[in-house]
Image (cartoon, rainbow, N blue to C red; front, side, top):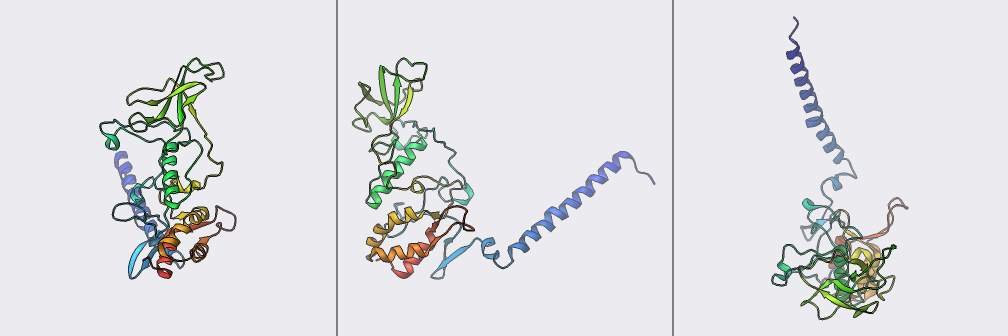
Length: 299
């Protein structure tokens, strides 16, 4: 018996639906689940959870914050690198801000930090973090292209532009990331003989030439890059050995133990390059902090 063409088309579609349902809706998920039960993979498939004192302390694969009830970092713990997603696996991702993002959107003075339209540039985020990390660990947070107040050291220079894009004789200069009424004076008093003004809320400086000012900060700041930049996923559980070393003195003082003993735990929780050549050595912050609590309980 020969069925009509329309019936044969629909029958083929139903067959394809059933086949794909069995293959992709049942066989494939079961195969992935079975692979996750293999020795060596089952721990990762279950989230690589780490337990301490009979409770789950976190995951060895997902970063987390070590802060108190007030949200401030705890001095007795090593701190993770920043997270663009606040360490939320459901919000995993980067800030998507690039190196040319150097100008802030200043807040309304009437609203201050509560202004929803205000936005920090990537440069200011890095500068603010570097200043905070430096103060927290007792070192200089100075960084190239950052003001002492912790914002991007960026000028808007107005005047006639030459063919090479420069403004040799400015008529007006504004520190675009320092708002009038928030800071008392700009990070530099003058630029090419012209007095530098503070930025005013609501003024548009887009027509000016954007000029980042390097300043006199060292080329190799005391605060390492991973202390001021978020990872691509926002969930990186590791920090660099350099960032761990920066925190050793603070943690040792907070726990009342010699720094050498804390350094030893850092070394024990430092892993080398993957397969011996990929990536860089790293320190798992959760495992290091748990080792600290076990060896030298916080007072």
